[in-house]
Length: 446
Image (cartoon, rainbow, N blue to C red; front, side, top):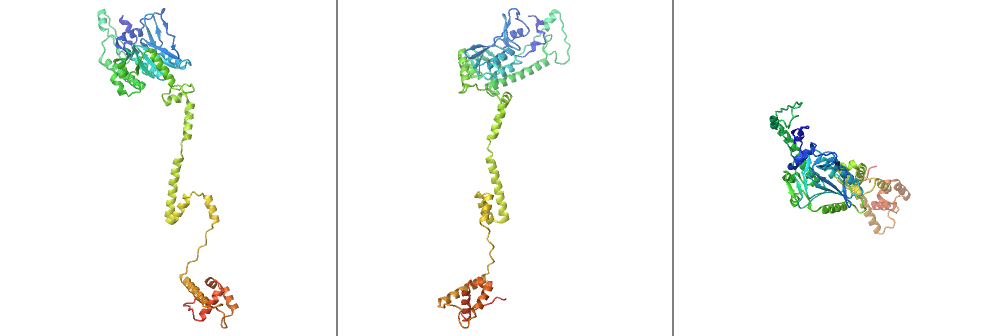
């Protein structure tokens, strides 16, 4: 390998999510080694079918762009992989997807986009490997609904790596002196004509740490675990078979056929009784973007189904209590009690108006004169005594007043009529008075 092969825009400083021992091969691909344009051909076969399960291979280093199959080397491209996933998800003959993975990983940039595409599939996805599901390959595989490994399959390598080449000593031996002219203090960081400076190392390390955090965050989200559970296994190490299951990086151990059966069972669980496929929705934002009319309908139905009666009832009771309290203050407790009874009965205003019309209020009684009452009672007792003595016509006699004249006086005097009731009683009183059987203590003037 010639050192000049690493001078293209400092590609040697590219961060990789790949097994370190495979980094050199991946870098060779990145710089164009191993391509035989006459014998190589693009991998246009997006997936194969195992029954109704689409099998999408992810093999070799994972690179940006399209996948490539060559006689010397091949790799899986981001764009081709997303296209395969989309085609399988839209194929009516496909019920589920299996990612058959044997990859050490690849370039870090863009891998999160592919993982998001896997997570966004409407059909169930199973990631399976009996080789390597490492680094970028695990980043993508972790987004599947289930992760399955063969007994010796390896998963993990959650980390980021970068390689810097220093050819300064080789240049010195060959008598070559390279000088870089830059605009921007960091533009030539990591160039191969000089050892890696402390400043450049710190800059690259910051970038690696940032990508590492993104990697861990995505894996935690895809696996449904807190990040605190992922960090202990995010040290770049690989886990074999059951070790990966114990570490929480895989769900089960099984063969390729087991992975296909698992995918079919997931498809069955996502199909309702009418045979319709259930949508895989990860968030409200996704549902709004893909089905705005459905979101509108859900919101309208939710608003219509809200029972506001309890709130209205509570408000009405509070207002009733306030009004009754004001009535008690203004009209007194007795009137308030009567008013409360009327309100509690549930009678309407119209009903109360009808009741009032049928029962007009009685005229106020005249003030009670206790002295007059006592006198009237005495008169009634005397009249009863006279009648009991055998007098058939009290008040009749030679010396009695002329009946016509006395009767006219009686009829003309409203007070006498009110006091005695009938003229006969009045005559009996006059007779008793004349006989000295009653005594008037005080006669009303006028």
